[in-house]
Length: 218
Ligand code: G3P
Image (cartoon, rainbow, N blue to C red):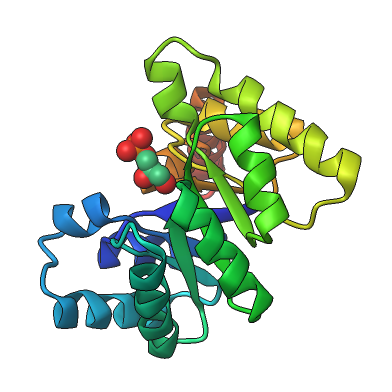
């Protein structure tokens, strides 16, 4: 399972990269705004800065909601770096744009997916990734993990090549469950990735090993 980090924060991206487990980055307009990045030129150069840190795919989201606008934006975004994947919302023109871009060999990530039907459309349009939002479904009393499992099964049934990129991951248990059901990728905040490290018995065990070593090596 690939690990993407879901942030536009360069320090966090660098930290995850240095850990050695980072396969890519996802961003969205809210995450860019959180870092105070605004204005087309600043946004474009921020994407470039992200691409300079990571080795894998970097999702950059369009803000147009019409087909022509999305294609115009996509063409500019892919000029930034070959790592750029064009993130397109799951709306009617978005599906058309994904089909247009994928027919031309441009990688896409279909975002804001909340149902299996939407995931089927994204795959049929040729999206490279589909992004179902687990946490936001959990927030409204639906089981986000059930959706991931359903999409994984459907894609396996028809050998769709679209990768299931579990998004809106909030905590380490989401990541573990995604691995169990066979999601291809998770995108998570740094805190959720780092939380995978933690176990109290590891800390207690290490403390004891070091104390015992010290006793006999004074
Ligand atoms: O990748 C989508 C993600 O950024 C949404 O996460 O926590 O805002 O639901 P969240």
